[in-house]
Image (cartoon, rainbow, N blue to C red):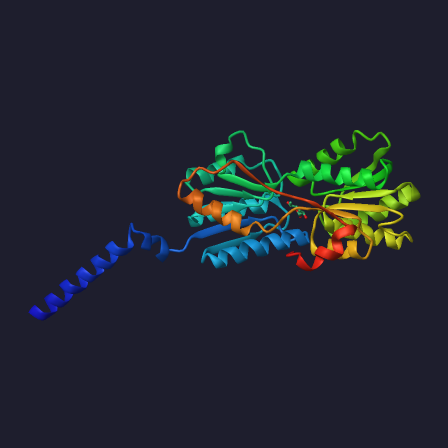
Length: 321
Ligand code: GYE
């Protein structure tokens, strides 16, 4: 009797000691891995796949319990995923928002639940920017301007351009259009003769280009695609129409994925403006800071750069995505 009383006293003491060691100390953070929800757009492009891989790999590296959701390009699915992350009581939420608008109600729910939200790669429009902690993304307007400047030089400031737009309502589609239009506005002989969405997909780029080549034929002298996948689809359509992409029709796009570098090496794509998708490390740095309650900048701009056929061969081997 006496012995068992001492034994149980000892075990209570041990439990209390280990609790004191773990709870409220740095050990507590080590013992409990973070649970983070990631509401991804989908898998529409090589860029998107690279971003998903970067975030998953960084999550694994930091031993984060990552809940991944693929919204298949639909905002309603993303909103559902965010609501479910909130219901599960995750520590933080990362969102790559499909479109710019329509986020306030669900972000208000996250804020009420005190769950920080980190936005990656696409921005949103909200009246209260305390609804998210930070945005990590490229400057899409400047990407559009870079594409326009490069094209103007290439074509001696004269071109009849087909523009392949990204997903309607998505920040990169809106801003790459804005930036490109601003960029060509100083060259009166550079005109966009048709502009349609290919939804950031290769199949979309091909279909739209096929239809526009039927309609405009030889009038088309250049293509500006809001991403590489659509440019690669357009290149296929140009070839099937019996023309030489890269020569008969100059092709410029954005992203800088491996496929674009291969197409530049083979002379079919002329230029791509890099948009870095490897956002995992920055995203989780932001998540950790936001959880600690640190103040973050509202936007961190990822730097971009244009690549063309003149350097494609030298840099292709070192491309990470
Ligand atoms: O350029 C495109 C993609 O949001 C920046 O989305 C991203 C864009 C990227 O599907 O390829």
